[in-house]
Image (cartoon, rainbow, N blue to C red; front, side, top):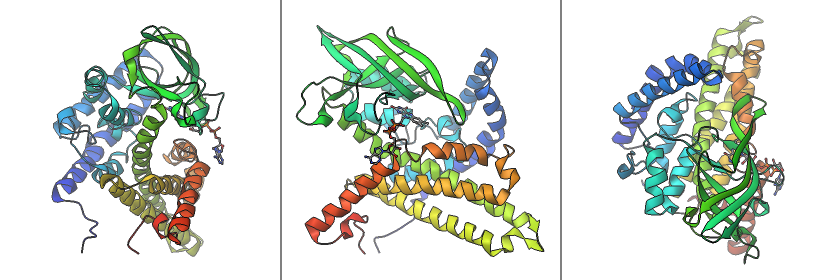
Amino acid sequence: MAIDYTFTPEIEAVRHRVRELVETEIKPAEDELRQAATGDGRADRRALVTMIATLRGRARDAGLWLPHMPVEWGGMGLGPTAMAAVSAEAAKSSFGPFVMNCQAPDEGNQHTLLHWATDEQKEKYLRPLCEGRIRSCFAMTEPEVAGSDPTLIQTRAVLEGDEWVINGHKWFISGARRAGFAILIARTEDNPEIPQAANSAFLVDLPSDGWEIVRDVETMSGSHNHCEILITDLRLPASNIIGGRGQGHLLGQARLGPARLAHCMRWIAQCETALDMMVDRALSRYAHGSLLADKQGIQWMIADSTMELYQAKLMVLHAAYRIESGLSFKAEVSMAKHFVANSLWRIVDRAIQVHGALGYSTDTPLAEMLKQARWSRFADGADEVHQWTIARSALAAYKEDGSTRRATGDLPL
Ligand SMILES: Cc1cc2nc3c(=O)[nH]c(=O)nc-3n(C[C@H](O)[C@H](O)[C@H](O)COP(=O)(O)OP(=O)(O)OC[C@H]3O[C@@H](n4cnc5c(N)ncnc54)[C@H](O)[C@@H]3O)c2cc1C
């Protein structure tokens, strides 16, 4: 039997060590970390940095640092399927991935630099990012044009002698405040052969003249360092381009496929937390002569959530397997991203329902989880854009093969 849903003993051991790190080190520090992270004083900032540094030290001591990066970059060299197991444990705390240095957007930027940067760029930007000495951001989305369609990007880079001069406007740039550098996507080509070849990617040292953080965009769940940036006559050496002129879209897409799946792996952890809480509450809350767990209406919510989480895990594992095996993965990642994002929303919502007023309060993490879950349905590819990809894949499969079989994961069924 070639199909095997188990990991090697080594990966299983890693999974259990991540669980232990989260349970014994990170979760007990969560309240203090959250207080420091939401405070705006210098003392809060210092306290946060100290606490994170301590936890990162523990992660390193436990050999749980940079799981997705090759050993020569200080990482654990895990492939996408093993990362699914690690992320689903690490993200049981929102600080978990950060403690292990595999959080968005740094994780995606690390992959981008590893595959596209020159050796000099790697030493200057990737090395300190991997060592946890700096953080980074990825600047693509603009308020004036649809982020879903990067061919519309208006931020413009013009080559003047041996310098790029860049002007534009970005927003929702996660982690921009306190980032050591940005990967910036800007238009460089006027008449590209295809619209997708108009943009290029640049490395911007931060802070920098011409890069102004206008504000931290306030969201429905508060401020989380998603910044609006004004770029005015920003000058970069010609060598600060990554991957060559007109490669920005390709590079963004190559980055986004695995990065989207990495989000799904973290959302699975959130789904499981919500389902555990739903069941725990149902087993202890008594109404109308029995526990909530004994009532069919509640059992349906538990059953639907359990089935959805099972499907989410299978889809993520299969898409990760396809990436790892060098097979096409675009439609599979789209299906996983759409399904997991929507399941996350539904499962957290049901958990709130079962908790009643307590679920709506901020006494449990569920209210914040629901607010965070909302962006998962349009960021890193809106639902409708993924459905478009999935439908195109089904239509193409049918036209070419006379069957949609290939579009449903190309499984041997
Ligand atoms: C928390 C958070 C963090 C983010 N971090 C970053 C970051 O670090 N860097 C960065 O560059 N960006 C970031 N973004 C931006 C994110 O990538 C964009 O929100 C996303 O690409 C969608 O772009 P948009 O918001 O402009 O929506 P639009 O492109 O305007 O889309 C709006 C809606 O239009 C519909 N739509 C769009 N296209 C189609 C279509 N083809 N068919 C049918 N319907 C369609 C969808 O319903 C979609 O939700 C972040 C966003 C959030 C919320």
